[in-house]
Length: 284
Image (cartoon, rainbow, N blue to C red; front, side):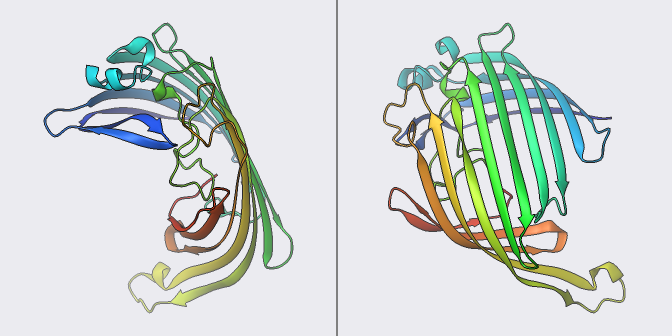
């Protein structure tokens, strides 16, 4: 078992206070801070089997905003309070059974997480999320990957600070990177068909550091499709909520030294938009 303890605090002169047309709107001030936060946490991880990990955590968080934020968005915080304090408890179960965690090509992954935010405070949120993927090697150089994600928040009536759903923390639909989709329930599926184009090592002469003599380099071409849905009980002018969303595209993935991964993707969405996106991190 391992444990970790953390503490974070700070102040910002900029804060996203509402979502309009599925884009975050920011309030800025050059004279004063508009957001103060404090977060402390204690976390325990337990891994009896090498492929499965259990994580338990408890945290205490505080956030403060000026009256101006609540005047322009009365639903920003619970009970329209300028200062909110609440504890948070969470449990996460993860399982990885793949050939290479940073960029798997065969195997299975799964993660389920249960979180409570509130417990006797003004905040009241229960959140369940699950995600997983299956990866199959179809032949020597061809691969297929299916990824799914789902989440549910109760009760459905939540302040703005609890409405984040898609477009946050690497949970997004390809082709909708410029949008955020708030809500309390929903999910998506992603299908990816890829082909290995190159798998080699570049030789670098080095007498001092033998491990750096070779730099691995792998290159994959891919086509993909996404389908998702997010339920928002109060959608307002958020046009991407409460409707099926689709996107597709083509791309190139580059994997090299120290698990450095770059994804270059040209995506098309059902709004008639298309663009070229560069991603550094993995995504679900």
